[in-house]
Image 1 (tube, rainbow, N blue to C red):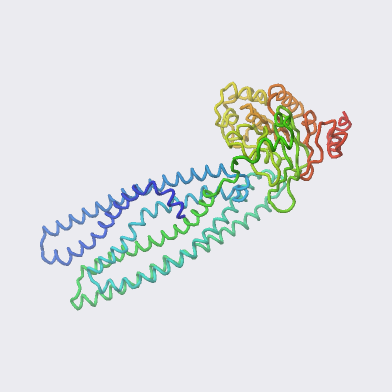
Image 2 (tube, rainbow, N blue to C red):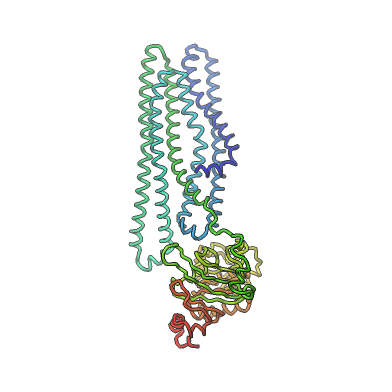
Amino acid sequence: MKQLVRKYLCPYFFRMGIGFGIKFGGTIMDLCIPYILAHIIDRVIPARNRPAVFGWGGLMLLCSFLAVSMNIIANRMASRVASDAAEIIRRDLFCKTMHLSNAQIDSFTKPSLISRMTTDTYNVHQALGRVQRLGVRAPILLLGGILVTFTLDWAMACVLLAALPLLALITIAVSRRSIPMFGALQEAIDRFVRMVREDIAGIRVIKALSRTGFETEKFRSINAEVARREKKNGMVMAVIDPSVSILLNLGLVGVILTGAFRVNAGTSEVGKILAFTTYFTIILNAVMSITRMFTMLSKAIASGSRIWQVLECGEDLQVLEKVYGEEKYEEMYGEEAMEDCEICFDHVTFSYRKKGEPNIRDLSFRIRRGETLGIIGEIGSGKTTIINLLLRLYDTDQGRILIGGRDVREIPTREFKDMFGVAFQNDTLFEDTIAGNVTLGRQMSQEQVQEALLYARASEFVESRSGREAEALNIKGANLSGGQKQRVLIARALAARPRILILDDSSSALDYRTDAQLRRGIREHFQETTLVMVAQRVSTVRNADHILVMEDGAPVGYGSHKELLDNCAVYREISRSQMGEEAAG
């Protein structure tokens, strides 16, 4: 939390200083009012000096007006600073989240990142505003009220002061215990958000399989855990307010008794007792405000630590200066391979968990620019992991991946990302127009969009819809069929005419005829583009220049369709199961 405050509040220190000064002035005006009242009762009224009564009364009105005005101005300034700082924190947190590697996102988990972006930033925003509004006012009212009571009557002030050390001990003890508890509560909320997110996303499956009762029971369990932690936190924080009220009310009883004896003895005055009761109310409100501020600070400290964990994350996938030179590469593959090899996997091994069995084992292959690579295998065989590594969403544990003779770790991020056009099977369509989903913020003309839709075989259904490419889509493209969604996603991948096009099982919802037309169109109009296709269907990859067959994370076959039918039993079995006797052709 300290780092967060130091980084994001430094630009506002001058403005905060002015606000604190105004708040200080307004608080002093509040403290002057009871003192003036005591003076009027004990000095002015007994003298029967009417002009003085009106004069001092006017001064009280002036102090009241200044107190209200200055506090309003200071509060508005505090709200502005809190809002501006929170806006920048949210912006930086979002940007940092967008640049996290997939491994870092897996570590934090998506629900936790959502919670940090929403609940945690809200807690910090509330604390920043509360501290500015009460961080000056409440301590000044507390300390100023005590000092003024000493000037009125030291004996009664000592009675009131005796309760404050106990209050301080209670507040500190509760705050120390509450901070880790709020952190644990946020972790429980992360799990709660993850479950709700999964259940809402898969609500059709839950209903279709009649698993509503099972999921409701799971929800009841995690909801009970969150409620239990909230209740525990609430019970701990609930100690403060009653303790403050009891101790200060006991102090007030002592003040009134002491004052009564002193007035009876002629050593004090009625106006001072009246002022004391007013200052008691001020001190009570100040202490209550401070305790509530500690409650909010406990939440904010826990939330600020969670936010800072994300912001201070280092760059996981750094761009290296030089992994190895061209001479080493030529030594490994020869000068000719150096010139025309577009994608090279060199003995690549990778594991998501970094423990146990790797997800990819000793994978090597090469394809030239403009060629097509088909990747096929059963579910869980490592097909999508290959794509993740090629896109450098993760770095390899062993081995190297090269594009155009350059290690992917050497290529600057912007240049590297611009090489690819990607369409995943379950990719996201945003709540935007069809054209907006194709361009995705990239500067493209309408002709480029229409061309991409044409080559993706999406122009037919787009033109048949009333709004064409300007029609707005629902969230996740809910108003499109599965095949229509995939064609829009493929159009997005084709729109920038990428150097490498990756289609990760992105035609699974297309019929055979449309799938064939799509592949033929890509071969005709994107001859310089290297195509990598992940597929479940042999018909999708059979015409590829190279086909990689994966099983349990290891390559079991590599070659053309005909070569694999002759040499790879796994591929031959897949072909026969899908195409029957046609597989032999």
